[in-house]
Image (cartoon, rainbow, N blue to C red; front, top):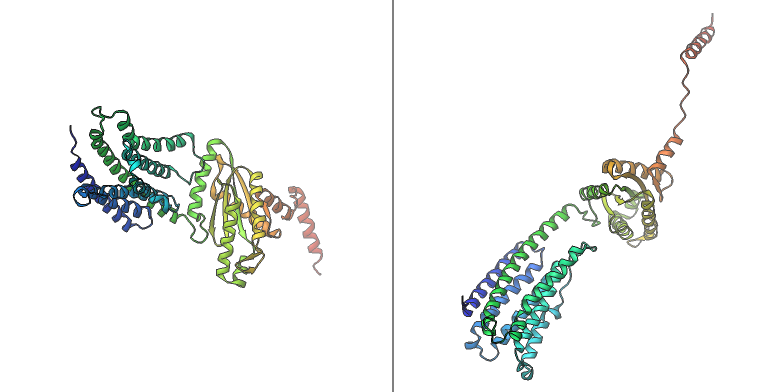
Amino acid sequence: MPLDLPTLFLVSTCIAALLGIFLLALWLQDRSVRALGYWASAYLIGGFAVALWVISPEVLPAAGADLASALLFACCGLIWSGARKFHGHEPVAGGAIAGAIVWLVATRMPELMQWHNARVVLSSLIITVYAVLTAIELRRDRRKPREGKAARARALTVPALHGVIFLSPILTTTFFTGAAPFAADGFFPLFALLTLLYIVGTAFIVVVMAKEHSALVHKTAAMTDHLTGLFNRRGFLEASETLIAAQRKSGQPVTVLMFDLDHFKSINDRFGHEVGDAALEAFAATASTNMRSNDIVGRLGGEEFAAILPGGTETALMVAERVRAAFEKRGVEIAGHVMNATVSVGVAEALADAADIATMLARADRALYAAKGAGRNRICTDTEARDTAKQEKPALAPTLAPEVRKTASATQFRVSADAIPA
């Protein structure tokens, strides 16, 4: 079936403009996904570029087509910039317009453009570079630094497919020139149609990603402590259950750490609540920096923090000591005030099969108060706290046999009776 090129251009213009308006409306509703602004601009400019391409033979016969192509390459750069913004990286301004600049410079070099299929090759290369860069950004999940083999394979396959799609004009015009249906004039409408379908599909993927991102932002906000950026109590408990379930599958233990800033009320009374908040932020940053990537730490409330670690007490003690020592050094001066802030730590271990996060928190809390009772700025395990409690508990009087108790009672009665004056 023959494909009418002007009709494809008209459809492409309308669809690109509608998608741009749609993405712009989504961005205006939810400004948290700033990438939508880049993508909306790209589709709107792309629609204008295609329209300019259609009317350029009559309106701008000399440079209209080259300008339209440059705008399309700028759209590719905006899409790549949006992908970078989506993952929290700042866009590269020079890189976003590099393709358009390369095209405009190349079209002013007649000796280069006279080469066979030079325009097709150059435009395909520019679009391919942007498509691969965009695909890499969209496939890269920076929250999972250690990906499996399957994830790495997908991350390589998707950019490769993008490159094949947009490099296809070079292959067809180079190796199948004049061979129907692969002739340049016959292949271009088909390539334009494939590109149009690709753009529409990409727009829907972008919308799904934006919605997932927005939902994740709201969920993260509900589970994050606004002052420290750590998990709040709800987030910590949910993450702890997930870690316990993972450890249960491998039959490994988990250990809970309870942290409490020493003399925190005194810090608030002496320096004010703003400085107290700075101390909490300093500890949160210290704990996050000195813990492993798979350790979970959160703020339960006030000056009380908790962490749950995969592994036993021996490993947890090393982590706890690292955090304690680092905060002792960091707490010498906070927010311009010398306060010598320190932290006490309680440790409680349990096998994942029998682990209950509420019970472990209670055990670690008892160990924490044992650490405070022993002088603060130290670490105490649940076992040490129990041993100390047993040693401090007063010895009970020995239990007497029944006949001995009777004799003792009778003797006591006689002594008491004899003491009564006549």
